View 1 (cartoon, rainbow, N blue to C red):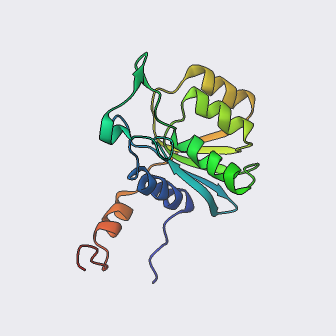
View 2 (cartoon, rainbow, N blue to C red):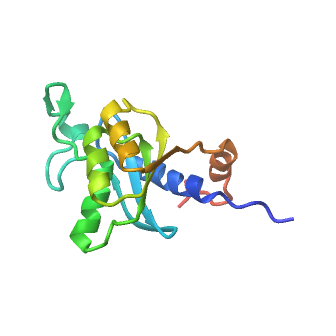
Length: 161
């Protein structure tokens, strides 16, 4: 009997986790994937504006306790769509951490219809209110350990040349 394939929501969330490994933020590594019709249309991670110094190189640029150098993962994914002319209306987002208030508002304006997230992160009450008002589905995704073990035990030895 063939082994069951990974469910779509865990597959896309693992893609977001993988993207988070590119983050240049020293405070929290976040990844986001925009998906429409089970196809990835864009991805992003939190980091500096292209060409600017990164937090991992020069430290955070803090103003009132917030790093103003970093563009959030969700915003980078939506901006990638804007840059390349890809519509976001009706798409879903998979993000490693619950979106902040500003990213929630941006996702709503971009027409995102569902938010999947891995970890709670300062879930803003007003963001939750807006999501309820706009009837946006929000779902926490738990990644099954067996998929993590499958990745680690894959027959591909990625450490050899």
